[in-house]
Image (cartoon, rainbow, N blue to C red; front, side, top):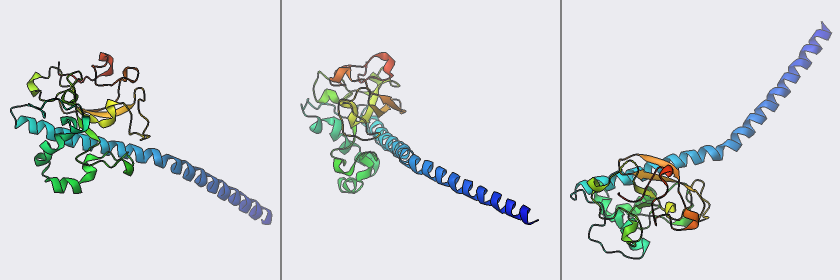
Length: 222
């Protein structure tokens, strides 16, 4: 009986040790997976914020004879003063916000995957309207375009993460620019979103022309 008790106790101790080791391994695996899980959550939040702004742009256009932001505005030559960024003022009423409230609601205009040092807000949002033709006529965009004139709404980008014009990705955010096929969220004229690699044309401005058809998106309304 004594031998059996010793054997039983030893077996129990071994089981206990194995269990501790397994718990440690699982805990380590879970800890290593946390950053990936958090980034997936941030990515979903980023898409939701872009979609909210995109839908506001569409409603704004419907209230202005179906014309998208930028109608009648001459090219600025400066992205930050173009409708690509200033569209936010046009849509504040459709978000139920005043300018003062928009300043306080900074996260709405910022991608959660960006660092705090990027200082995004409604004046310099991380999400841009696809109005690069308001920067220069040589660039593609939808500034001032009427919605019925968009021939392929399911392929034509209405909004995108600002990094899409370089391109770089916020997922994860590195700050590195001119990254080939960097993935960004885009929001299409028909109201759906996509997380797509942005065609870089070998480092040239991604908005200078439409990418190959296989990319699944385009910047121009044609």
